[in-house]
Length: 251
Picture (cartoon, rainbow, N blue to C red):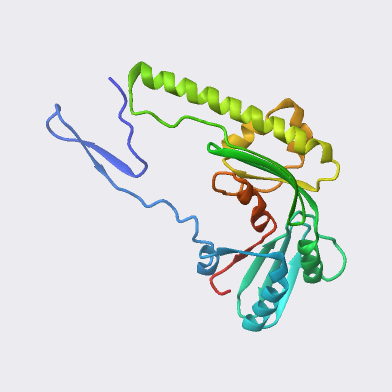
């Protein structure tokens, strides 16, 4: 006979008829993990600001919310206004210089042109490029064929699944070759490598044994992109150069 496991808060009783067992459940609400957070903190939202617009965005924040206090560490700047509005700014390509005016340093740091490597991978294609600021300097784009799903079942479905797996493996290998050809020669110049598309695809490509120096410079999350094409790669700096700012609901 297997054990009867009751949820926490349940009570158990046996009726007068020994052939029947009854139990009553008292369902307890789990503790509210946000109870210690203010409503403003729970309602935070994120905006992304282009480097050349950051100066104006900071001025408008101060105009709307009054005097501000600024705290910083190498990767984050926190702005607190007198009306309770807060803005937490993630420093792009940290660290931020420790001396001088934090906001002035942030603006200069965000606007600076730097060498960046980019790797974009999705099932519908891949793209690799080097950028100086927003200018694409060198690139390679591919559009391998990876078969879509089939409605057939049984052995046919398994055969198609194996074929798709082989095609994806070949596409990842071609992308790794392009990364080695485009990014490795410039790896000492690259301040960071950014990724876009599919996380699993990025991991598969950068698992190539040749690409250890590229993996070491991978920065930030995998950014969402459509299927990589040249125009998608050319527009990628709009994403990886943008400054991410988390605002509370008073901001």
